[in-house]
Length: 525
Image (cartoon, rainbow, N blue to C red; front, side, top):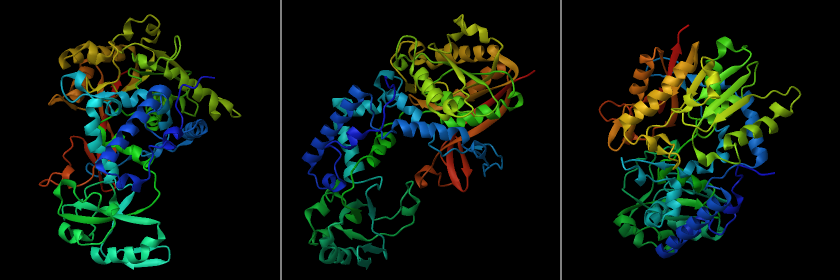
């Protein structure tokens, strides 16, 4: 039986390019560059031949287990208070449950992100692995993340007055010179740990995500004093970096493989990448905004931009008296599998046949219907017309104009409408007109969109959406704040106001969080 999803990336993790951290650390510049070349080739081979992107993934049983967890997950706890406003309007979903649906869509990380108005110049994570002209940039990034461990995945800075325990040895740090003397005379023979010197500005400020590294003081040494120390060459592998004059000591346990933990670097720092809508958040919204008619014989939910299937999965996982029928539109031909079928069909059928929803004592599954058309064109489809005035909820996260190139199909909206004004009228307005016309009265439309910088301009996606919908007779009921990542460090906060520099931010449990708006619209009775 054909599997339309990739599984755990064991072949890459067990390959010869998955070196130990110390092997990477001790490489010469030439050897490191060759390792990068070999590693890129292996990633591209697995991606092209087996549909396996550089992610860890889950095996089939783990996918089933994760999908089963979705049905009983306490989504009612997602809604929390924004401490800035006092309003309980923040959706705080930190769970990764449901992310396994990504494994049906290996092209997610091939999505090009466009920063300029020349949409052909956008880059994807795949491009960084596959394109020769990006090799040197890749080497630079990889050197920072693997050879100098910029994410602190493998080694930690040694703090002042830190008590280090290695086997039966115990040592309280004071100076670099004394640490080196202790390690070389007593700890080196254990052969379980080692250290290296990290180029440092001489300051101890840390502005990243790891709370344990903030407001710490570390043992430091100047380059002149470092060169006087009698240490192995492997400990000095990074001392020539950018003419640094001060260094910290980083201690690490030997034998750590660079991957899987190092795979995070490709997603976080090489370039932006497309992300799925959190399935559990979709489930929460579906249940909340169909509550007043949940015993209806069938609830028709329309998703104009089905994307990577996160919202479809959220609908399938609803486990109460509701009978859900999900209708999705998306023109992306990368999702095709066999004649008349797409990846949406494949993973929805997987969910409806493999999870306990189908195999338990009281089986119950939800239905779905997929149209491989753009939402600006769907009103022309004769079969879709049966839903006119019969949709019970509309919820999507539409394209942000040409910010993300999901595929190279000519049917993609950024291809059809190359200028923002024409896209707003030809795609956004036409989509919303269809939504309003097909939505029942006394029903909701949820619109997840945020302003985006494109080609140096800020696209007014939020206000344009609000203006179009209100002009069509929809009542604006405000917004929910779908929280994203914590914003680290002083470099993201205005020194004068003490507030984040991001456009959309909130505060939850003392943390500054970015958020994406989910605008709530109601169609009156």
